[in-house]
Image 1 (cartoon, one colour):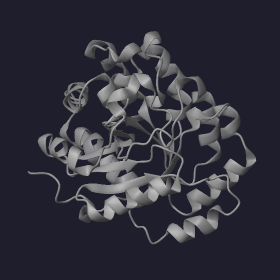
Image 2: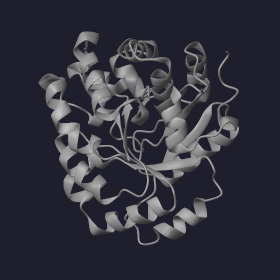
Image 3: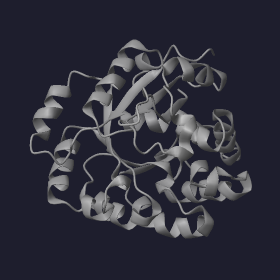
Image 4: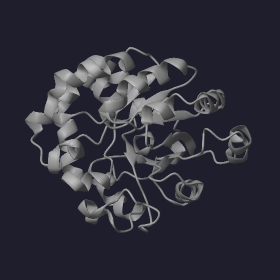
Length: 287
């Protein structure tokens, strides 16, 4: 089975384009492109990676799609479209030739009122259009809005929804509290979750494996391996460590699982949910 990093970013940094990269994130204030990630993918045996938008811009999405056409290992793109726009159906039709576009994401966490945004009628209409067209929608919220995300997901069950970064748990409150928060979302069979972005949720980016491993256990109990996928969140993960540490943390968390369960999380779940094909990722790994 393929081994896929289901969440990473590429960008040409400009402060106006990425205002969320603040003074505390100086390591991210530079360009990140496929040649920088490729050695890391090869070192850890990955066959490819899913590139995810990092700003609400069709221009960035087009740039990611161009990378998918030009670069080995970009096996799919989760881009950005204004799903609340009345012309969404026409925009999706215009983007149909881009076969690498596998999903759409909006940084809901950055809205002034994320719960209100998820409840907007025009967002609901856009989601219906998006799901009819067969695109995955990724939900980016924090733990504060998991209840609103569950209500949103309950209204939109015609295709896969994917929760990013464990839903950004409150690490200080522990995995038991997060497990209670996540239960309504996990109960929906069309919702999957990315095992990504956990270390950067630790206060100050300082973490111990023993502190984070219970969140993996809770995710496994809630979603099961068939609805979980590994994502590095590179380069954002550099705020709290390096690529190797992120991979090793997940490897440790999954070490007691059987081969089929591990294969699901390391690639098969992403391949199935995003409809990834071998032609897009077959030549990255040195294996």
